[in-house]
Image 1 (cartoon, rainbow, N blue to C red):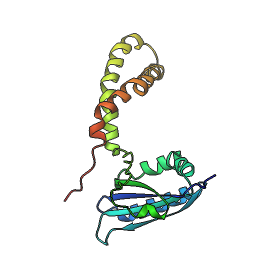
Image 2: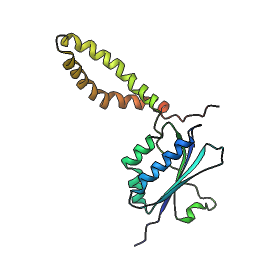
Image 3: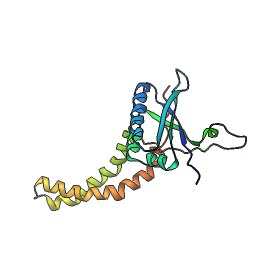
Image 4: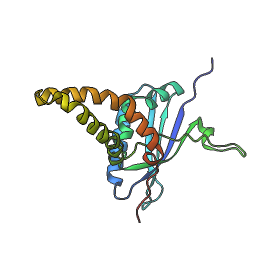
Length: 190
C-alpha cells in the first residue's frame, strides 16, 4: 500500500494597507489553531519585500485526509472569516512532495480559489435589503390584528414569523442576487 504524500498549501494573500501587524497576529492565531489538528506538520509566512502588501502563507499536512479535515473545519472557517477586513486571497496552490515546487515544462499549476468573506458592511446591507420591506409588510398586516396584545407578545410573534422567512427564503435569494457585489475583490486605495 503506497504511503500518503504530505501536501503543502501555498496561499498568496494581499494584506490591506496599514494592517500588517494585525495580519501577523492573525497568522499566528491560525498556526495555533492548526497545531491541534492531526497530521499538521508546520506552517510559516513570508513577505515578498519589506514594503510589499503581498504575503505568502504556507502550511503542510501529512496527507490529503488531514488537510481536508482542517480545510473544512469550523475552526478554520472562523479563522478565515476573522480576517475579512485585513486580507484578500490572491492565489491558493496545493502541492505534494518536494517535486511539486518545481514545475516541469508544460505542466500547469493547480490553483484553487478560496472563498472570500464579504466585508461586514456588505453583509449588513444584504440583510437590511430584504428585512426592512419584510418587516414593514409584517407590521402592516399583523399590527391591526395584534394592537391589543402586549407589545412583548406582538413583537415575539412577529419575530417568530420573520426569522424563518429571512433564514430560509429571503436571505438565500438576496445573497444569490448580490453575489457578484458581495464577493467583488477589494481594491487598494491609493
